[in-house]
Image 1: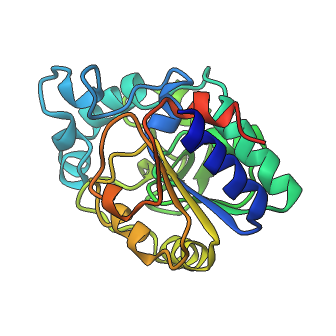
Image 2: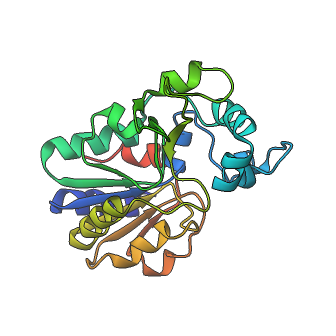
Length: 239
């Protein structure tokens, strides 16, 4: 990995509009399981497939079962940022990173100090009443029993994009603008198979596209640099 790593170091030092696009692999090194790996969430057995449970239809029809699964498998309040999260926050403070575009919902980028984080799939830290719109914390949802409810009686829904739901329009616009104007796009910890998010990589107009992932992705042919290594291992060696 020495030669590709040195190239990435050079790219980072020469760039002033870095954008990072990340997926579940960024958080697995913090102890948060991903979805599609051998030990991932989608390979575990439940009464319903996780893809079904995490759908809008299931949420509406079976809210108690949804929240039981959600509390057990989607909330990780004891996890801490890793080397990748911390390095990205450092770059932002130094003025060389313009945005983090993430498919993760765990809030670890913000916990590390990143400010301009574009969460394509929402966040477990934001929750709202479906009736009156009142905001609630992650702890409120986690500590409630059964279906969490607002004092007005409405269901408190996590601001997480479920299957069958659309991504937030404003977040998409900001992510597209950031990627299109980047002089270095680093894609890490994602298989690039979940759309429409994965398609955002095609909007990059620069010449420096780096992919950091343990396994091949559909975008490998377009990358100028590929590192097959754990993302934390790579980022811990970057300037």
